[in-house]
Image (cartoon, rainbow, N blue to C red; front, side, top):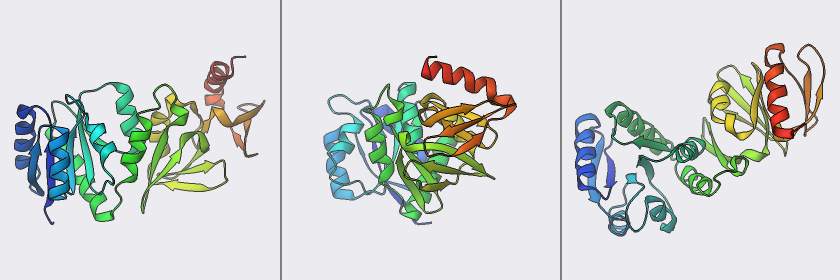
Length: 255
């Protein structure tokens, strides 16, 4: 494997030294080309060294790690964030399929994050996730306006969550159905999206289906019943999930 040229950015020298040692001990494929303690210096090093990977602290005095990314005319490197921030920020990372490490950094999680970054570099799949993350950071409190990165065999596709009508399980994959009638197949199983999208008005109505409450137009009674969606599709509600659907619909539609 070719070495991954890397820059470390953290305003705390102790944090830089700790991350450097962890990488040297656990990630021999990483070549540390430079370290920075400020956004200004990091910008200069990125322009000079053209890294493939940047470990980026978020909370720094003056300008933040997000400010650095916003100032870049283009982002042609992978980014692994290092953060101690709140749950909303973590949600934004998950939606954007961006790697992050919580301080203090765990060696196993570091190794796995570097492995994923190396895979994305091989696939030349970077860029879209960071743009989605920067968008999502401005959508606090309005999850339906956030963007979701859907991994496929070719890389990632970035979509608006509000355009997703429902998801359908397909073995270990998940098919996404959209308002414009396109279908995208994700390489992740549906239970991962059930957890990820639970706070975004999505509800698991069947072992095979995850529905967006925003797009439910009608409920048809039955043992479990079924729902009519905004695209005209009718999908089954399992008997076990009926009560959950009723609770979620009453919360959402307030009836």
